[in-house]
Amino acid sequence: MNKFRIPLALAVPAVLGLAFLILPLAGLLIRAPWSTLPERLTEPGILTALRLSLITASLATVVCLVLGVPLAWVLARLEFPGRRFVRALVTVPLVLPPVVGGVALLLVFGRRGLVGEWLDQTFGVSLPFTTTGVVVAEAFVAMPFLVIAVEGALRGADARYEEAAATLGATRWTAFRRVTLPLIAPGIAAGAVLCWARALGEFGATITFAGNFPGRTQTMPLAVYLALEQDVDAAIVLSLILLVVSVGILAALRDKWVAA
Image 1 (cartoon, one colour):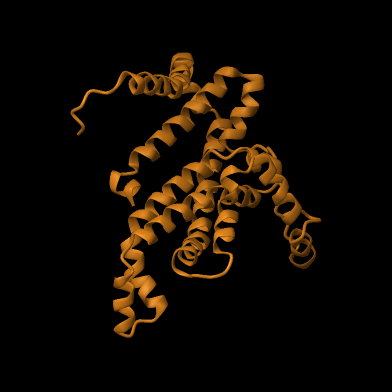
Image 2 (image 1 turned 30 degrees about the horizontal axis):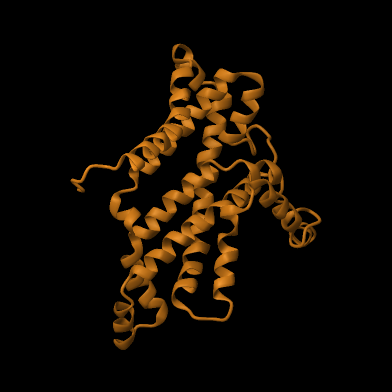
């Protein structure tokens, strides 16, 4: 702990920055309809949107784990031409406007998209405006969080353990499964939690690619957007639920996970 006094030039901006981040959240708590909160929480529309959000965010996180962990390993362990460019492409969804991401998904997975037309004609599978489309949209915007966290954990892990396993006759897959994964487990856990939280709060790509159909594609953020036009109190209640879930998820990130 630093025992020196904080310079005024740092303390004032720090306090203002903290207030800037906390005041909007405090506004939700102050304006919340506490007297009718229990009744509103049991409304079918809210429960349906919450259940759909939890399911799709969890499925999107599984997709990100299956695809993102190997991708992070490739970026961290292999040297190949254009690796920096590939890494930049992987992180593009972090800075890409979500609506643009939704348009890009439509152009690829839509019924007349590059891949979607083939899926529709060959297997009769259509992703846009379906629950599966919600999972695809959430995975697209959330996967970079997992890849960055796991790649950082891989770069921080001592590669000599993997080399020692190789000298003992272990294949690269065995070394990855038995040595690398246990070493980077905290990083994977942190990345998965952040990925899940990002998927839970996804809005732009979801509404563009999957639409806003109650019970099928209307997740919590979409329900907030719709309620804001009709019932402000309902929008506040939905926002409170997302706030509580998000804070709980971030609080579950232990310091060692974040450090990893």
